[in-house]
Image 1 (cartoon, rainbow, N blue to C red):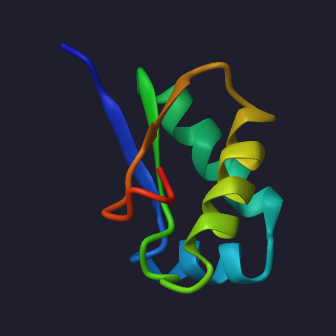
Image 2: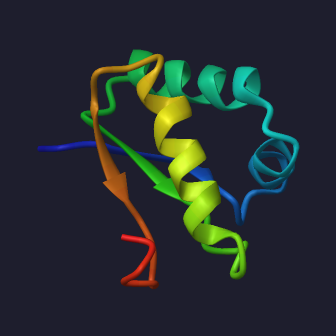
Length: 82
């Protein structure tokens, strides 16, 4: 069984705020918690930021990859963002 950590999603109020404010520490702590809990992949989703999704998703990917070597699951309905 593969486990995908799903906490890094801008539909969650605190994640949305952290992405808007570019709060790396908060995002990275969420990643560390998922990593420690056994996630095999870290999902990243910035879909609530329609006009800024691509930039926010790029920032999230860089921020997440600074603290884990787990593969990312890029989660978006926008083919251009993926």
